[in-house]
Image 1 (cartoon, rainbow, N blue to C red):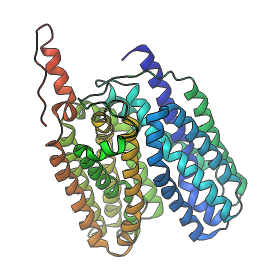
Image 2 (spheres, rainbow, N blue to C red):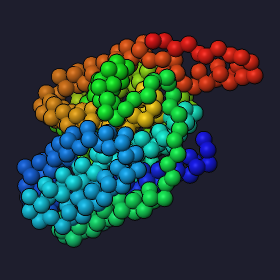
Image 3 (spheres, rainbow, N blue to C red):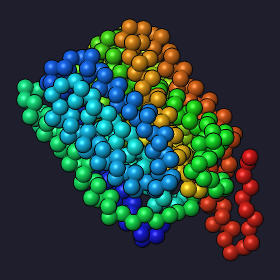
Length: 428
């Protein structure tokens, strides 16, 4: 990595931390703010959460094209300004129409930030540094969300609208501060791993759909986000309260345990993960999550004391956190390495779109099941987790050696240095 790439990467990581810190101030309290503090009711609060998902689904296809044509930095700046206006609008909105309009802006801006930042990481990293760069991004995102949520919890007061206005103003200020930080970034270009041919923005979507490995990865990504992230604050929490008798304070402890495992284990896990085949790591995550769902099932049986059920439920979230720490240096770099040169933005946006679809469908399916169909809920998502392992193994058959295990290939090249070595053969 060159000095210019390193300087740009440091600013990008600062940006990731700032955006997550700002979101942490408001995300945990959005429902309470709309439904209770503004007195707009549960239906409007539910619509606000739905609007976030709908806005993301609308803008992400266009975001990919814009990143390819204009570059990730201008798109990121536009997304940040849009999100800042939306955040400030939410803090000042007094009726349902204004709240929903502000939610559209915040949801759209927040959605576009993800592929733009991911593309910047790709452009400012090399094959040797990419996994660590994405692991650092995930670490800082969770740390920022946790710290922001902790501070926000001490500032918020449900009896004072002004306290929530302050939270949204801080969130908007973080986005605008990030605009200033990003304006100083000088974007270098770096080669991608793999041997994909050059593509154009015009034909990028058709080319993406013709990339069988990328299509399989998108299917796998949908199942990953549907079976884990889409259940955290919907089906799994409902199951914990209704089936396992978990208190709201214990639910907060479980979420904290998830974040703590990610923050503590991320770089320890990285040293192991980056030397393994990526698809085998994803398959292992599926098995770990299957165990997590089985532990959640035990908590719901309540054969022991309530303390044992609570401990099992907290362990479920901790196991999910371990899997997330393994995925962060694995999946995002793989998306980048499957993209033809110049089309990382299109591929990142497509994968972000798949993620948003899973996050929209997951709560809709898992919420009612977790609240009332306890045994079928656990069995269903345990099977989905095992399906992750199956899909990962199948994906591994389609990837080249460079895409699935770049560390091993680099080592072979280094070992042959000084001699006329033949190129490493890759599977079709």
